[in-house]
Image (cartoon, rainbow, N blue to C red; front, side, top):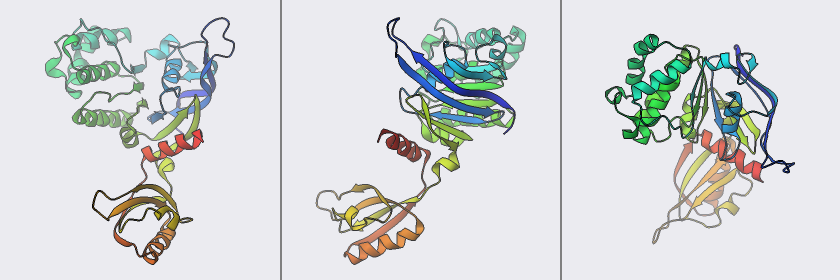
Length: 317
């Protein structure tokens, strides 16, 4: 791995309701991970998994944790590393009485950059996020997507080495999401480390080098996108006539993922089967032996969303 930018070891964070709450709620439970320079790191998990708490611990916004949390080799929350960090919070609340330009200048100065230095860079970032023509409007006049774009621009304007993006494409249209993906790729190529937390798994799959899936404060799966999506392929079968007992007919051959019965008056249905290539022939033979016509077979690549759902379901069982 390249230079370690972010390191967490046996991290725990428990929230307590009061002095007499001895047990509390453990939001982070023994998390360990490392992120190298120039890496796009995807952080996934259902609601309440501990993702945002983990980010806030790393930024020094949440204290009272146990274990190690380091950024640039220093304990998380130290003032100096913060100047090298950009942060786009989830559901952020930027000052609505300021213009987009003023917001970028304000947060850039808070990160140690001079007004003159910022004024040279602000137009470029406004253009990159598609907000140049609205730069001098008050934020109260912005739509949710426009506020999200300005939020991203303020996180980037001081040229950070480490970037935390918490739901970066929330409320952004497809054109804006594509622009954000391009920005992430360019930052990665120049050595910026990017930590992405998002519920849009297709977006994470396109940009991430490594992914962690959390549930109940713990890491339940970790690896590259290729590693997490590597498994038996799934196939969609269109069959005629449809049989309600198709799962029983294929018992022991792969795994039935879903069955779609025909609509009113129709006889043609479909089902999805996860199977190895060697099992595919057995499935076809059984269907034909049962007098079922196969009208189409479509191979589907396993997505990060499929992997995520499988991991969460397995963990709940």
